[in-house]
Length: 84
Length: 221
Image (cartoon, rainbow over all chains, first blue to last red; front, side, top):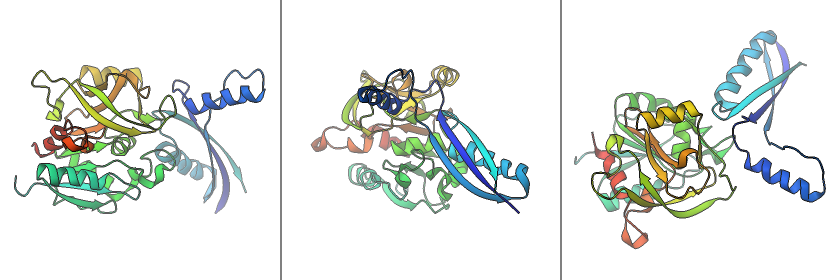
């Protein structure tokens, strides 16, 4: 069995308004940061998982992302995978 | 109707289950039974309410974890059989997360948790959930949510409108919902999800009775 470290990034789709991102952008500007054009907040999920090779692990992670980690009505996801 | 029993589902974090039960039993004389979310036996209930609250602490997304409970798995057959399911607030979020209703509910536009009475237009009474038979096309119900902004893509919105699946619209959109949507049904009409709380508007002493009709309609066949 191989072990992998997976980082899943879940983001609101561009068409979905992100009020938390807007509020944080507003605070960033009050802090004095200049030049912020856009700020959107997502989630990062770290998973350690084992399986028989990368393909099998990718299948598992695809299922998790599609069914649980992200709601694809409002969110997109991508992930990176590193063999440990 | 003497033996008609409404199952009120209890998730860890549900907090409107007792209100729903009180409204059904105390105001409408309809028998209820609490069903723990780990049960998958729905054989002795005739309709189901998914109450409001914060199932599983709203972890990940509202309703996202509840979707994987044995009860929600069993709900598929229950819905297919034509029996009625009412999802209120967190219950509506669970119904969208689990695919019984289209779209999703996301953070309110102004980020506030909104606790207020709202005026609602009855757009459709598909499934007989609302009384739009007379001149009264507007009702007032309480809302209490932080994530109640209904969102869907334009194709879904068109489908909802074309098939009369939009049940309720806010008169003064409080949360930024697409097309002012406050509640929708499935195509068959036996599943209703709404953000407002009909169970909190079942007695004049607590501010109104506009929720009675919807709860009473749980006993429709």
